[in-house]
Length: 96
Image (tube, rainbow, N blue to C red):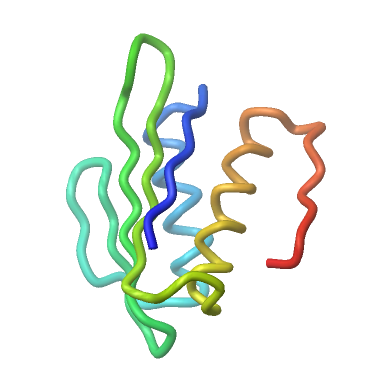
């Protein structure tokens, strides 16, 4: 599955959050500027954060698992945490 999120959070902050969020659950398996990959028993996930259109950042989270898998739920939850970075008053809802 692949998910996209457009945010005002800087790419470096998104990547730092990805390292903290996924690094606690999966093993880092690759890193490049504004790109990080993680793998584990749940599967593998890649996070990219690139500047887009002025002051926006395009965040992409791609996994090798089907929708509604455990890793897919983690990917969606991660994008929710990025939203909270941009808007601290935002409340995460949903069954992740």
